[in-house]
Length: 122
Image (tube, rainbow, N blue to C red; front, top):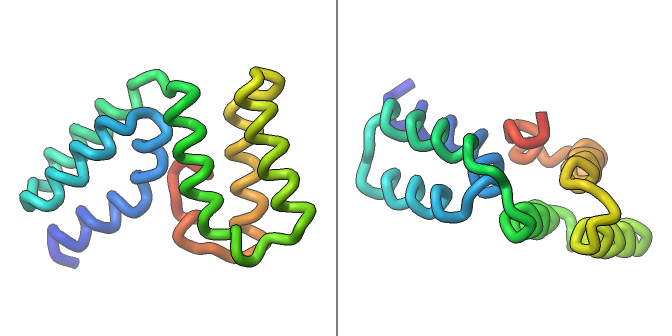
């Protein structure tokens, strides 16, 4: 596998974990990938990103992005659960892990391999 392919595979696995922690790093890494940065540089940036404390906004943004994989297939009950979990998190009734677990359950149910391979869900 070429170095570029290895880098792209790593990014596909890490992108939602990075987004969860920092939209700024997510954007920075996307730009670095466009500039054909080395695998080592991308690994370094990912490591920095995951040490950033997630904000409520970054968690919600990631949850909504990942939900996009299901919104066409989700049942009415799942759509309601999505909204309820989002509201509970926004109102600090639940924590970010509940959002992650819900997305993981949907990824398993609908066999969304791209998400199942995400380090955020593992």
